[in-house]
Image (cartoon, rainbow, N blue to C red; front, side):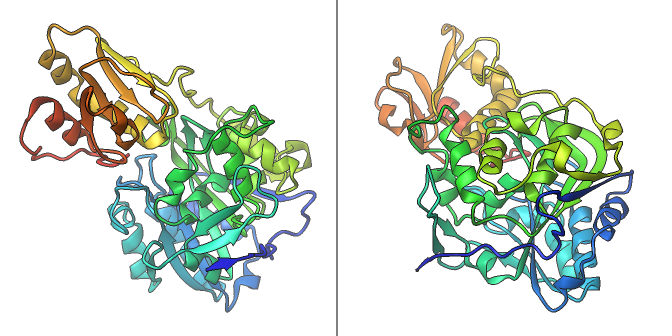
Length: 408
């Protein structure tokens, strides 16, 4: 099914040229997130079908900085239920995570069910193909149908850095509304003629032409810095950011992370097209001195080839899933890997679809390196889990203690 989808305006946006954003700070995620939402009149949601869309694409617990804290989702559910809305919660996880597994692991499924809010498997039904007349890198999207069937969508992301896009916040969180493997396809696009930005950033800007939430609630209680979105370090900030313009919410979140939204390619591109406001001078932020809550989040390393003693990483056009898998694998099994090849220095590891040649014995991780399987040690998966990589190298039996983040 192909559709031309017209984005519904947000009933919570009183002045598109000067959007309002509210920042709250406190130790209780539920109470502080609820306070941020209380600054907005949610009355227009009465009788509407509202989809709460957290960042729950990976298997991780609340408070890890990887997924949205279930207490923040609980606050969003309660606020819209009190407004008379019919509330559902759902997300489409990254490839390799079983349907609602991440929603269950984070506790999000439990808080939703306790409130009588359906927990939706957004990948269960066939996608709706949505055309992008203004698309530059993309001309269409495969969208989970439930996203289009709800009257209002609330993006509830985590405040995180991202190894490819700089940050992953309210705008990029809507990538989880894309159906199954189509999320991966945004990482596989060729360079866009006339653009110096990554094709992924151009594609996210394209996506936000039709997939923009009507309200966003940023979970900055515990975020992630460094090698986000899943292999970084948890960072406690205790802030929550709400607003009807997802771009404005992201711009304020960037400032709280010690960033400038203009330096984030997908935000800059989307704002230039008129999809939202990132100029802090045009955003009405309450409190006005919100920057007192800011902290400098550690940046993503400039060289994403993971530095580990005795290991050399060949990384050409990989996605964040394989990069995170490799980082977590080396953290947990790096010593065993080095010991298994005592006469080989450095051990060569390859990830990404852009690797043209590998030396014999190269450890080739992920389906994108399949072409080199005859010349190296190939580990299939998109991405493979860390224990599978170890078994491919050593022939070890199944790990009885599975990876803490099995599919990053």
